[in-house]
Amino acid sequence: MGTKPAVEGFAIKSISSREGDAWIKQSKAHGEEFELPAGHTLRGISALVDAEGRVIQEWRKTRADGPDPLEITETIKAAFANYQSEHVAIEPPEDVETSLLTLIPCNDWHVNLMTWRRETGENWDLKIAERVIGRGIEDAILRSPAAGTAIVLGGGDLTHADNNENRTARSGNALDVDGRYQKGIEVACRLKVRTINAALHRNRSVIVRVLPGNHDEHTAVAVAYFLLAWYRNEPRVTVDVDASLFFYHRFGSVLLAATHGHTVKLKDMPQIMAHRRAEDWGATRFRYCHGFHIHHHSKTASEGGGVICESHQAPIPQDAWHFGAGFLSGRSVQTITYHRDFGEVSRVRVAMLDAANDNEPTKLAA
Image (cartoon, rainbow, N blue to C red):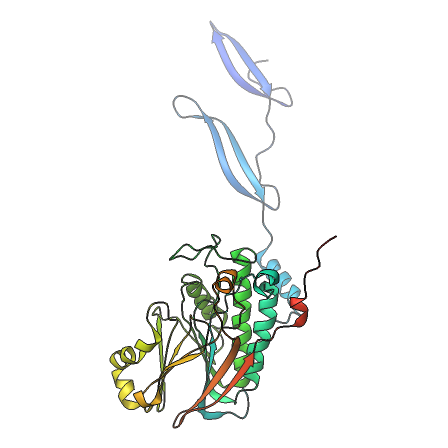
């Protein structure tokens, strides 16, 4: 056939010759020149080469194009056309007394604590804690004067356990805990947001500080930064993420100080405050130190000494260990309101009476 055009559908593969004779090998011809399919992009190229690097065969990999970015944008816009955010800005109250500051202690909530009525006289778990503490703190805030400033002060021990090991970090004591740690921290965060929102309804601006205690050294840090992110777009909320174990705030002639109480005794706070806040000390007439940790109310220094030191009750029942050791204390939450020129002028206390249904006797099966 010579080297004339190959048979239809075939192509010349090779030509061999000897003394004027020629042998021509034909093979089935390949298809047409490669073109990318519509809607595809070239993903990669693989090649078979000989020892000298010449291409013997080549493979081209394609893939379908993704959706048009403009189409995606229009789809998202259409999906959210009637969407309303769950976050609704809280309007500030119209009539507030700017010369007042209300302190809202949120201490020793021990969220994820569990108690058994037949062992301690009270039933307590995550559901009861969220309902009872949330109801009590909202009641206290609602009945407080409408002030220019409120301080939501976490007094430490927001959670009972600081991790899933359910033991205290310092002594390794076993803790009675309801649910996994993650469930407890969810409830704790909801309660803090609920408290701050209630304060926003009642006061013009809100300062938030979360002090760590001996039960929540790590959780307190996490919750503080959670609140910082949660209220990042709320100009009326200032979240203080200072890492110190001490809190200080000067308001006119009033100086406030607070610490959980697991590292220093409350009676030593006046001299610490006088030394570390000497300028504020000299510019104020009314000085108050707040401590927590011990779960009962007491005053360890008098007005005559220049500072009133006060420890606060907790809103929770006693766990099995404290109940068995015979500790006694009341349960409450409260707010304290200060006038910038006259010191403390009022306070609201809500006793934790709980719901009777929470503590009905357990009926044993026959």
